[in-house]
Figure (cartoon, rainbow, N blue to C red):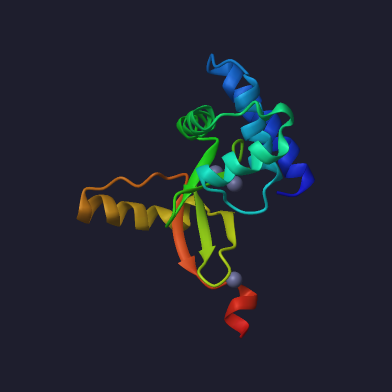
Length: 153
Ligand SMILES: [Zn+2]
Ligand SMILES: [Zn+2]
Ligand SMILES: [Zn+2]
């Protein structure tokens, strides 16, 4: 994340933990900071690996890191990115747009979260609900494709 987004993500995540009655433990805090500092989605083992390398005194343990990620996911502060379920911090927590598409480049694995106006996705959501009896999570839709530099080659 860019520095501004990382700060906002960290701040809002800590606030959401507090608001939902979760304690700000050291484990949770370092996991949030790790995702904020990351430029790409990280798997749970990758988060653990980074933290065990970076955090002084090796005070992180695998189970707590995994649990912290789970808590962040439940609070919708992070997304699980297909196909591997890597974690990406959500920088759209207070976004006025309720619809987002997570685009993943299959060439370089670059993942972005984009705002999508309601009138653009509403027909798609309606169609899915109608045909599949399936209600998609309106916050995030996933889409694979090619980014600009990968499609140029
Ligand atoms: Zn999001
Ligand atoms: Zn947004
Ligand atoms: Zn690409």
